Image (tube, rainbow, N blue to C red; front, side, top):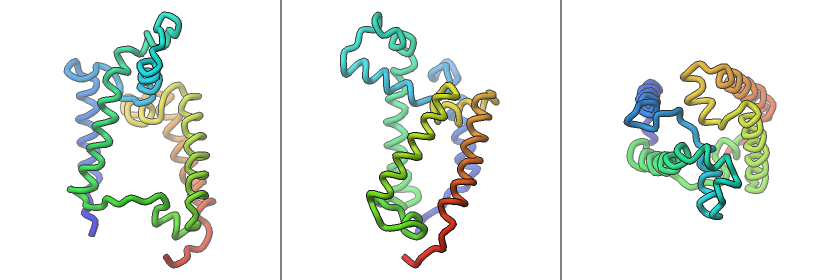
Length: 170
């Protein structure tokens, strides 16, 4: 049996994380994740910050985001294994099997396509998905509100269209 954590506990913890992130003891800036990708690429490929000026701009931001992302991965794993006791490896989730099909290829293709559109929308709005949702909306930034509204509206429309088929027994 999966142990559920009340939604408000997540809200309180997220608020504390955001307050810490904005503080001087924390990063002193909003939470985001996409900055780490070019930062890490600059390290791996030994890119010159003088030639790639964006690397110079993101140096301080990118350095802590990798630790945050690793912490999110470890924290999610710890929570799924020890707190909610819901951890399992699955390429095709139960809901996908119930409403769509058992195909791994179908699941991977749809995941890639939807993720591609999500990240394009986030970049067009001037940030990453986590930055817009977590930091942008908590600061009531117009771009964060627009992005959040479009994503949630798209979620409702897509959910109705995508899962309109009668469910089959799994």
